[in-house]
Image (cartoon, rainbow over all chains, first blue to last red; front, side, top):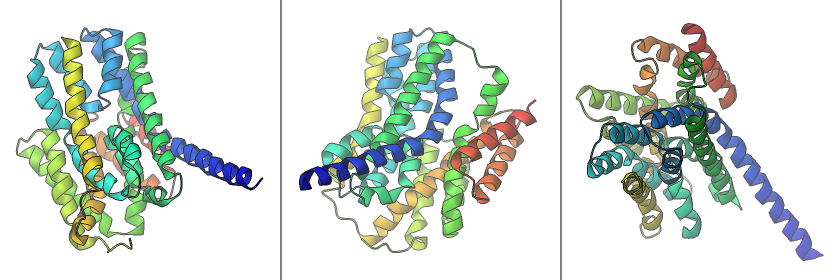
Length: 243
Length: 97
Protein backbone atom coordinates (compact mmCIF):
# COMPACT_ATOMS: atom_id res chain seq x y z
CA UNK A 1 0.00 0.00 0.00
CA UNK A 2 2.56 2.55 1.13
CA UNK A 3 4.91 1.78 -1.77
CA UNK A 4 2.00 1.97 -4.22
CA UNK A 5 1.22 5.47 -3.05
CA UNK A 6 4.85 6.54 -3.40
CA UNK A 7 5.04 5.00 -6.88
CA UNK A 8 1.97 6.79 -8.11
CA UNK A 9 3.29 10.09 -6.79
CA UNK A 10 6.57 9.68 -8.70
CA UNK A 11 4.85 8.61 -11.93
CA UNK A 12 2.61 11.62 -11.58
CA UNK A 13 5.50 14.03 -11.31
CA UNK A 14 7.24 12.25 -14.18
CA UNK A 15 4.12 12.57 -16.33
CA UNK A 16 3.71 16.21 -15.33
CA UNK A 17 7.33 16.92 -16.20
CA UNK A 18 6.93 15.27 -19.61
CA UNK A 19 3.76 17.30 -20.27
CA UNK A 20 5.49 20.50 -19.20
CA UNK A 21 8.44 19.67 -21.43
CA UNK A 22 6.26 19.10 -24.48
CA UNK A 23 4.39 22.34 -23.81
CA UNK A 24 7.68 24.24 -23.50
CA UNK A 25 8.93 22.59 -26.71
CA UNK A 26 5.79 23.46 -28.68
CA UNK A 27 6.95 26.93 -29.81
CA UNK A 28 10.17 25.30 -31.08
CA UNK A 29 8.06 22.85 -33.08
CA UNK A 30 6.17 25.75 -34.66
CA UNK A 31 9.42 27.42 -35.58
CA UNK A 32 11.16 24.27 -36.78
CA UNK A 33 8.48 22.82 -39.06
CA UNK A 34 8.58 25.48 -41.80
CA UNK A 35 12.38 25.68 -41.67
CA UNK A 36 12.79 21.90 -41.74
CA UNK A 37 10.39 21.65 -44.69
CA UNK A 38 12.40 24.29 -46.52
CA UNK A 39 15.56 22.35 -45.74
CA UNK A 40 13.98 19.16 -47.14
CA UNK A 41 12.90 20.92 -50.33
CA UNK A 42 16.35 22.44 -50.90
CA UNK A 43 18.19 19.22 -50.12
CA UNK A 44 16.00 17.34 -52.59
CA UNK A 45 16.63 19.97 -55.25
CA UNK A 46 20.35 19.73 -54.55
CA UNK A 47 20.16 16.07 -55.51
CA UNK A 48 20.14 14.32 -52.14
CA UNK A 49 17.90 11.28 -51.73
CA UNK A 50 15.04 11.26 -49.23
CA UNK A 51 16.97 8.85 -47.00
CA UNK A 52 20.11 10.97 -47.08
CA UNK A 53 18.41 14.24 -46.29
CA UNK A 54 16.34 12.74 -43.46
CA UNK A 55 19.40 10.95 -42.11
CA UNK A 56 21.26 14.25 -41.99
CA UNK A 57 18.53 15.64 -39.73
CA UNK A 58 18.67 12.53 -37.54
CA UNK A 59 22.45 12.57 -37.25
CA UNK A 60 23.37 16.27 -37.24
CA UNK A 61 20.28 18.06 -35.84
CA UNK A 62 21.65 21.57 -36.40
CA UNK A 63 19.65 23.67 -38.84
CA UNK A 64 22.06 26.30 -40.13
CA UNK A 65 24.87 23.82 -40.69
CA UNK A 66 22.54 21.47 -42.57
CA UNK A 67 21.58 24.23 -45.01
CA UNK A 68 25.26 24.97 -45.43
CA UNK A 69 26.14 21.29 -45.82
CA UNK A 70 23.50 20.82 -48.52
CA UNK A 71 24.85 23.84 -50.39
CA UNK A 72 28.41 22.62 -50.18
CA UNK A 73 27.47 19.10 -51.27
CA UNK A 74 25.58 20.61 -54.21
CA UNK A 75 28.61 22.60 -55.39
CA UNK A 76 30.86 19.59 -54.92
CA UNK A 77 32.91 20.80 -51.94
CA UNK A 78 35.31 18.34 -50.33
CA UNK A 79 34.37 16.29 -47.28
CA UNK A 80 37.06 17.83 -45.08
CA UNK A 81 36.02 21.33 -46.10
CA UNK A 82 32.40 20.59 -45.19
CA UNK A 83 33.40 19.12 -41.83
CA UNK A 84 35.56 22.11 -40.87
CA UNK A 85 32.83 24.56 -41.87
CA UNK A 86 30.30 22.55 -39.85
CA UNK A 87 32.59 22.53 -36.82
CA UNK A 88 33.08 26.30 -36.96
CA UNK A 89 29.38 26.97 -37.41
CA UNK A 90 28.32 24.64 -34.58
CA UNK A 91 31.07 25.45 -32.10
CA UNK A 92 28.70 27.90 -30.40
CA UNK A 93 26.92 24.87 -28.95
CA UNK A 94 30.03 24.20 -26.86
CA UNK A 95 29.55 27.50 -25.06
CA UNK A 96 25.82 26.88 -24.67
CA UNK A 97 26.35 23.34 -23.47
CA UNK A 98 28.89 24.50 -20.88
CA UNK A 99 26.38 26.99 -19.52
CA UNK A 100 23.55 24.44 -19.51
CA UNK A 101 25.58 21.59 -18.00
CA UNK A 102 26.81 23.89 -15.27
CA UNK A 103 23.14 24.22 -14.26
CA UNK A 104 22.67 20.45 -14.44
CA UNK A 105 25.47 19.53 -12.05
CA UNK A 106 23.18 17.54 -9.78
CA UNK A 107 22.08 15.24 -12.61
CA UNK A 108 24.00 12.07 -13.54
CA UNK A 109 26.09 11.66 -16.68
CA UNK A 110 23.64 9.14 -18.12
CA UNK A 111 21.15 12.02 -18.32
CA UNK A 112 23.57 14.80 -19.12
CA UNK A 113 25.11 13.03 -22.10
CA UNK A 114 21.94 12.39 -24.13
CA UNK A 115 20.59 15.84 -23.23
CA UNK A 116 23.82 17.46 -24.43
CA UNK A 117 23.44 15.80 -27.83
CA UNK A 118 20.05 17.46 -28.28
CA UNK A 119 21.30 21.01 -27.66
CA UNK A 120 20.51 23.43 -30.46
CA UNK A 121 20.17 27.20 -30.30
CA UNK A 122 16.48 26.76 -29.70
CA UNK A 123 16.43 23.86 -27.22
CA UNK A 124 19.22 25.60 -25.30
CA UNK A 125 17.37 28.91 -25.18
CA UNK A 126 14.16 27.35 -23.88
CA UNK A 127 15.93 25.01 -21.44
CA UNK A 128 18.20 27.72 -20.08
CA UNK A 129 15.22 29.92 -19.29
CA UNK A 130 13.64 27.07 -17.31
CA UNK A 131 16.49 26.55 -14.81
CA UNK A 132 14.22 25.57 -11.91
CA UNK A 133 13.28 22.16 -13.31
CA UNK A 134 16.95 21.11 -12.98
CA UNK A 135 16.55 21.26 -9.21
CA UNK A 136 13.21 19.48 -9.11
CA UNK A 137 12.68 15.77 -8.77
CA UNK A 138 12.22 14.09 -12.18
CA UNK A 139 13.25 17.39 -13.75
CA UNK A 140 15.41 15.59 -16.34
CA UNK A 141 12.21 14.32 -17.95
CA UNK A 142 11.20 17.92 -18.57
CA UNK A 143 14.35 18.62 -20.60
CA UNK A 144 14.20 15.26 -22.38
CA UNK A 145 10.58 15.82 -23.47
CA UNK A 146 11.39 19.35 -24.61
CA UNK A 147 14.38 18.21 -26.67
CA UNK A 148 12.59 15.21 -28.20
CA UNK A 149 9.64 17.41 -29.21
CA UNK A 150 12.06 19.65 -31.07
CA UNK A 151 14.08 16.73 -32.47
CA UNK A 152 11.11 14.84 -33.91
CA UNK A 153 9.56 17.98 -35.41
CA UNK A 154 12.89 18.70 -37.08
CA UNK A 155 13.13 15.18 -38.53
CA UNK A 156 9.46 15.02 -39.54
CA UNK A 157 9.66 18.44 -41.20
CA UNK A 158 12.77 17.50 -43.17
CA UNK A 159 11.15 14.31 -44.39
CA UNK A 160 7.96 16.15 -45.34
CA UNK A 161 9.94 18.76 -47.27
CA UNK A 162 11.71 16.01 -49.17
CA UNK A 163 8.47 14.21 -50.00
CA UNK A 164 6.21 17.09 -50.84
CA UNK A 165 8.55 19.49 -52.56
CA UNK A 166 7.33 23.06 -52.69
CA UNK A 167 3.89 22.86 -51.19
CA UNK A 168 3.98 25.87 -48.92
CA UNK A 169 3.38 29.10 -50.83
CA UNK A 170 6.53 31.26 -50.91
CA UNK A 171 4.98 34.18 -49.13
CA UNK A 172 3.81 32.08 -46.21
CA UNK A 173 7.12 30.29 -45.77
CA UNK A 174 8.91 33.64 -45.93
CA UNK A 175 6.64 35.04 -43.24
CA UNK A 176 7.36 31.99 -41.13
CA UNK A 177 11.07 32.75 -41.34
CA UNK A 178 10.54 35.13 -38.47
CA UNK A 179 9.13 32.41 -36.19
CA UNK A 180 12.36 31.43 -34.42
CA UNK A 181 13.45 35.04 -34.00
CA UNK A 182 10.07 35.86 -32.49
CA UNK A 183 10.46 32.88 -30.16
CA UNK A 184 13.87 34.14 -29.03
CA UNK A 185 12.33 37.56 -28.39
CA UNK A 186 9.39 35.99 -26.57
CA UNK A 187 11.87 34.21 -24.30
CA UNK A 188 14.12 37.21 -23.71
CA UNK A 189 11.57 39.93 -22.97
CA UNK A 190 10.08 38.37 -19.79
CA UNK A 191 13.61 38.00 -18.36
CA UNK A 192 14.31 41.64 -19.15
CA UNK A 193 11.09 42.65 -17.38
CA UNK A 194 12.23 40.76 -14.29
CA UNK A 195 15.80 42.09 -14.37
CA UNK A 196 16.63 45.01 -16.65
CA UNK A 197 20.35 44.23 -16.57
CA UNK A 198 19.59 41.23 -18.79
CA UNK A 199 18.86 43.72 -21.59
CA UNK A 200 22.37 45.16 -21.33
CA UNK A 201 23.90 41.69 -21.64
CA UNK A 202 21.75 40.85 -24.69
CA UNK A 203 22.28 44.20 -26.43
CA UNK A 204 26.06 44.01 -25.91
CA UNK A 205 26.04 40.53 -27.47
CA UNK A 206 23.99 41.85 -30.42
CA UNK A 207 26.39 44.73 -31.03
CA UNK A 208 29.49 42.55 -30.78
CA UNK A 209 27.93 40.01 -33.13
CA UNK A 210 26.98 42.77 -35.57
CA UNK A 211 30.49 44.26 -35.39
CA UNK A 212 32.12 40.88 -36.06
CA UNK A 213 29.86 40.34 -39.08
CA UNK A 214 30.79 43.82 -40.36
CA UNK A 215 34.46 42.92 -39.96
CA UNK A 216 33.84 40.01 -42.29
CA UNK A 217 33.89 37.19 -39.77
CA UNK A 218 31.86 34.05 -40.53
CA UNK A 219 28.47 34.04 -38.79
CA UNK A 220 29.53 31.03 -36.69
CA UNK A 221 32.48 32.79 -35.07
CA UNK A 222 30.55 36.06 -34.81
CA UNK A 223 27.85 34.39 -32.71
CA UNK A 224 30.46 32.61 -30.57
CA UNK A 225 32.31 35.87 -29.85
CA UNK A 226 29.09 37.83 -29.30
CA UNK A 227 27.92 35.22 -26.81
CA UNK A 228 31.21 34.86 -24.92
CA UNK A 229 32.19 38.53 -24.78
CA UNK A 230 28.62 39.77 -24.31
CA UNK A 231 28.17 37.19 -21.56
CA UNK A 232 31.30 38.51 -19.87
CA UNK A 233 29.35 41.58 -18.85
CA UNK A 234 27.35 39.20 -16.68
CA UNK A 235 30.36 38.83 -14.38
CA UNK A 236 29.63 42.38 -13.23
CA UNK A 237 25.89 42.49 -13.81
CA UNK A 238 24.54 39.13 -12.64
CA UNK A 239 23.60 38.65 -9.03
CA UNK A 240 25.34 36.11 -6.84
CA UNK A 241 23.22 32.99 -6.72
CA UNK A 242 22.36 30.83 -3.77
CA UNK A 243 23.63 27.34 -4.47
CA UNK B 1 30.47 9.50 -50.12
CA UNK B 2 27.48 11.43 -48.81
CA UNK B 3 27.24 9.00 -45.91
CA UNK B 4 30.86 9.73 -45.05
CA UNK B 5 30.14 13.49 -45.11
CA UNK B 6 27.05 13.00 -42.92
CA UNK B 7 29.05 10.99 -40.41
CA UNK B 8 31.78 13.64 -40.32
CA UNK B 9 29.25 16.45 -39.85
CA UNK B 10 27.57 14.47 -37.06
CA UNK B 11 30.84 13.87 -35.22
CA UNK B 12 32.12 17.45 -35.37
CA UNK B 13 28.71 18.63 -34.16
CA UNK B 14 28.42 16.08 -31.35
CA UNK B 15 31.85 16.58 -29.79
CA UNK B 16 31.48 20.24 -28.75
CA UNK B 17 27.99 19.48 -27.43
CA UNK B 18 29.20 16.50 -25.37
CA UNK B 19 32.46 17.69 -23.83
CA UNK B 20 30.83 19.97 -21.23
CA UNK B 21 28.71 17.06 -19.97
CA UNK B 22 31.93 15.24 -19.07
CA UNK B 23 33.90 18.13 -17.63
CA UNK B 24 31.47 20.07 -15.42
CA UNK B 25 31.52 17.39 -12.71
CA UNK B 26 35.32 17.49 -12.55
CA UNK B 27 35.57 21.27 -12.34
CA UNK B 28 34.62 23.62 -9.55
CA UNK B 29 34.10 27.08 -11.00
CA UNK B 30 34.75 30.30 -9.13
CA UNK B 31 31.75 32.55 -8.56
CA UNK B 32 32.66 34.94 -11.33
CA UNK B 33 32.78 32.05 -13.82
CA UNK B 34 29.36 30.90 -12.70
CA UNK B 35 28.00 34.42 -13.15
CA UNK B 36 29.53 34.45 -16.64
CA UNK B 37 28.00 31.09 -17.55
CA UNK B 38 24.63 32.14 -16.15
CA UNK B 39 24.67 35.20 -18.39
CA UNK B 40 25.40 33.08 -21.50
CA UNK B 41 21.71 32.32 -22.27
CA UNK B 42 20.87 36.03 -22.46
CA UNK B 43 23.97 36.85 -24.48
CA UNK B 44 23.25 33.92 -26.82
CA UNK B 45 19.65 35.10 -27.30
CA UNK B 46 20.91 38.57 -28.16
CA UNK B 47 23.47 37.26 -30.65
CA UNK B 48 20.93 34.90 -32.21
CA UNK B 49 18.31 37.65 -32.68
CA UNK B 50 20.47 40.42 -34.12
CA UNK B 51 21.58 41.03 -36.83
CA UNK B 52 20.08 37.74 -38.15
CA UNK B 53 16.50 39.03 -37.87
CA UNK B 54 17.19 41.55 -40.65
CA UNK B 55 17.92 38.72 -43.11
CA UNK B 56 14.47 37.08 -43.22
CA UNK B 57 13.86 39.25 -46.28
CA UNK B 58 17.44 40.06 -47.27
CA UNK B 59 16.58 42.93 -49.63
CA UNK B 60 14.24 44.54 -47.08
CA UNK B 61 15.83 44.46 -43.61
CA UNK B 62 13.11 46.69 -42.15
CA UNK B 63 10.56 43.87 -42.47
CA UNK B 64 12.42 41.71 -39.98
CA UNK B 65 12.94 44.69 -37.69
CA UNK B 66 9.24 45.60 -37.68
CA UNK B 67 8.31 41.96 -37.03
CA UNK B 68 10.80 41.98 -34.16
CA UNK B 69 9.35 45.16 -32.68
CA UNK B 70 5.86 43.68 -32.81
CA UNK B 71 7.21 40.57 -31.05
CA UNK B 72 8.81 42.76 -28.35
CA UNK B 73 5.50 44.57 -27.85
CA UNK B 74 3.46 41.37 -27.64
CA UNK B 75 5.96 39.77 -25.25
CA UNK B 76 6.08 42.93 -23.15
CA UNK B 77 2.33 42.91 -22.52
CA UNK B 78 2.79 39.37 -21.22
CA UNK B 79 1.51 37.18 -24.05
CA UNK B 80 2.58 33.53 -24.25
CA UNK B 81 5.54 32.75 -26.55
CA UNK B 82 3.29 30.96 -29.05
CA UNK B 83 1.09 34.04 -29.45
CA UNK B 84 4.19 36.18 -29.83
CA UNK B 85 5.34 33.88 -32.64
CA UNK B 86 1.95 33.98 -34.40
CA UNK B 87 1.78 37.77 -34.04
CA UNK B 88 5.18 38.20 -35.66
CA UNK B 89 4.35 35.79 -38.50
CA UNK B 90 1.08 37.66 -39.17
CA UNK B 91 2.91 41.00 -39.19
CA UNK B 92 5.48 39.86 -41.75
CA UNK B 93 2.74 38.21 -43.82
CA UNK B 94 0.74 41.45 -43.96
CA UNK B 95 3.84 43.58 -44.70
CA UNK B 96 4.82 41.42 -47.66
CA UNK B 97 1.30 40.96 -49.00
